[in-house]
Image 1 (cartoon, rainbow, N blue to C red):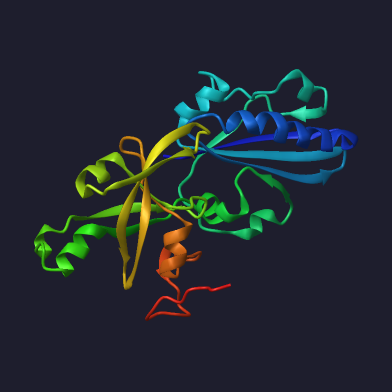
Image 2: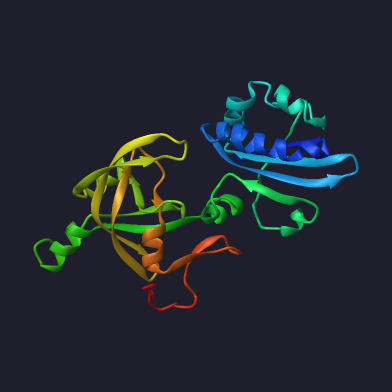
Length: 266
């Protein structure tokens, strides 16, 4: 279960900006290299004797937190440079199991959101939680052969998968296990940056038909290592004219065009 880690401190008013810069340029860059780290935010408010901060991070589990904080992960990680900025800081942090991410913007009534590690176009995935879609993947070359009556419909390789809807990814991404089932032709190889920052060389295969509800698109796919999580990226999402419903936290057909996809030309 995902875990939230909360650290509260009060900085000297004149050094508040210095603390924010330290978090962005040092702490957060380190967090982005840790497998299992999800996101981090800086929240602040003015108080009588300084500026109060709440540093909220989210992690896949406590084992991931230990990679940052050590075995006794409830002890706050406060370097000397930060101690010099502070009037007060938690010596032990608070951890919470994340039960739900239903949006409640009242949590921001007293705090100003200063920074989030993820890009704005990834806001839905990170703030509301991961959103998955049940899609069907079909070998596009097999479909073409079936249309020409060269092979039968039963010979068309296809499978249903649960894919993470990731507007931060550009392409459809499958894994090696899916590629083994679909046997898509390799078109080229490309370098890709994984969520942990690692650069890997991946095969690009095609063509694959993606079907979701009454939508379909044909595209190429990047093959991620092993059993990596399949990703439904921006290109197939845009082409199918589907979007994330923030209330239901699910992928839906664009309600403005319920019966057919409408593409943007400009």
